[in-house]
Length: 82
Picture 1 (cartoon, rainbow, N blue to C red):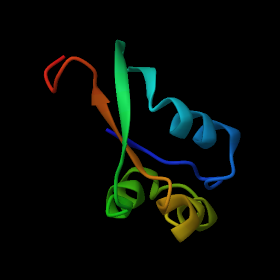
Picture 2: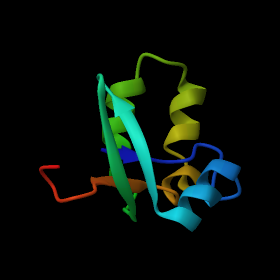
Picture 3: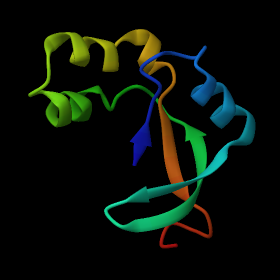
C-alpha cells in the first residue's frame, strides 16, 4: 500500500510521518502497525485508475511532482505477512 501527501512535503501530516516513520492504519476492516518507507512516484498510474472518475483537477493534484515527491510505502511491522 502506498500513500502520499497531496499537499506536498510542507503539510503537517507528511512532516509527522517523516519524523516518526511509523503509524497505524485501518483498511477494509483490518488494522495494522506499519513502517513508512520512501518510495518513488511511479504509482501515478494506480492513482489515475483509482481516482479517474474524479475531476481532472483532483488527478492533477494527486499526481503532481510535488505530491509525487512525498510517496511512501506502508510496510506491515513484524514482516511482510504480519
